[in-house]
Picture 1 (cartoon, rainbow, N blue to C red):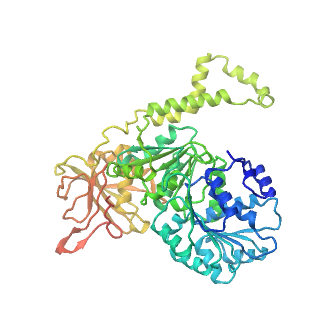
Picture 2: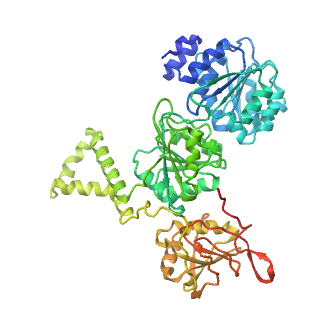
Picture 3: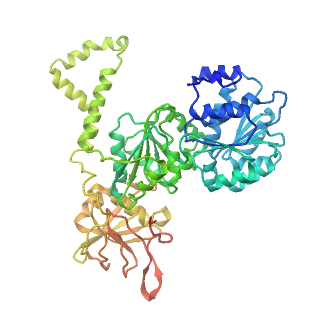
Length: 590
């Protein structure tokens, strides 16, 4: 393969690359770098996330900078502050032996006056998000009249995130003589619109097939009941003792909830989303890169720009709403010629989307079995044994204690000692997976058979959390579904008031309900629960479905373990009302 030294780059750049460990260019770098050095034509380059696009566009720009000018010569736009920071950091490393060339990153979430003062350093390269960049141009702080290069990195994501107006404004403001370089993982009509409107007969460079996933990533999926989604995530983590993974969720709220559950269950995990501060984000990312965090739970937006070497897995806790986003997600692993694994957790109603994902990434997805408790314990046991065997012993530190330790253990046989030491480290898994259920069993229709609820007697419980604390019916159902002791329990009326909630549950589960709710918290509030009445007949008309049906009393009800649909019900006098907080919502159907 052609080395960097044969691409015509400045020797000072080559020296910096050698120190970083860059020896041979990736396919996108090998095509783009010589092209940009020798051509002033606009360029549309398509390559997957993690293929080295930053070096592909920044190295030829650095090579051609005008040392006699202190104006901003290159503007690099990207979708998120994390990616802006990462690109600026990479560019600075390439500039190590070219003193006097400053690079500046600008983005939202930081005080604008601080960034305005930074322009006194006369940066020649500015990396920014569209919103903050457009703001600084309008303020007259970022002057673009001498701009030579405008780079649109992750252009598809910038458009998907709603930056169309800002991009149009920046493209219209910058001089017509600039060279526009558009880099994207996918090609859609909006990308083509920019190319048609703001680029002059651009050249095209494509590495791999358009809109396809990386070749060195394997794709697997698990089919689960909705109630077992979190437990499946736990089993994936436990079945891979050395896992270092990104876990993708759809919303900020779900991201935080999943991370909180993992932390509560003693996993090395953190959340990253748009509501955390930049300082906290930087701290979390540094710990994740140093492998002090094994599982980083993130939203799609927050994960843009995360560049962590040798991630073992990308786990899709949910299928993304936009299938294009899956290409970006899976591209977080399998970087720099390393192999990677992308996993998707789906319920039966989402299973058909796997075929759509296969079409999107151009690769087959293999259905995997959810690891059993026995499988996990075996893997964890031998992982522990391997760690003990490979552990380096500091003789100087431990030598003085060996005599005393040997005396303590002298009454034990070798086998007994091994068993006790292993058990000390291993009991958490043995206890958790003792008599564990097979999550693969009966994975079929998400709908339960018709069920006659007229003979069920309910107990009514009073819970100290209501609408003011942000409680919704869906959240309550999710909590119940996660409690293995309440699997398949029949739910009666749910009435959510401002400061409390009334919940009816099959009275046979009374003690289990009191135990599960009494040791938990929701939305940061410790739950207190009491049983007000037993022997209650359900007022709900049987709908013959596992989810919540319409009923005269106006509340909600349903059997756990299946997706519930929340709709308005008719109350007295024909008025529409509902007992949950906020507007009743119908679960999205695909």
